[in-house]
Length: 104
Image (cartoon, rainbow, N blue to C red; front, top):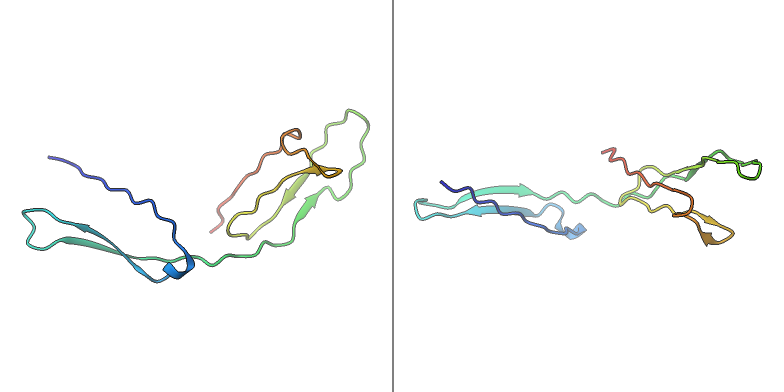
């Protein structure tokens, strides 16, 4: 007895929406191929909601650790958030973490 697994890695585009994808299995003992059919649904891009930053204003003493959150919802594909200070990218220096929550 064998288990055969075929994994398809495919990038779908908007024009693929509604198209039919088939997994066709053939074997010498089959009178006809075993076909499993899938309908492809490609989600349309969704513009992000306005960016929310918390807190709105920062007042700190030298050496204070501050936590600032920048969040954007309802974006597809997901947005990329970077942090800059006076035009210089500080994303890695600021211990920033990007978290993606799939809300669909």
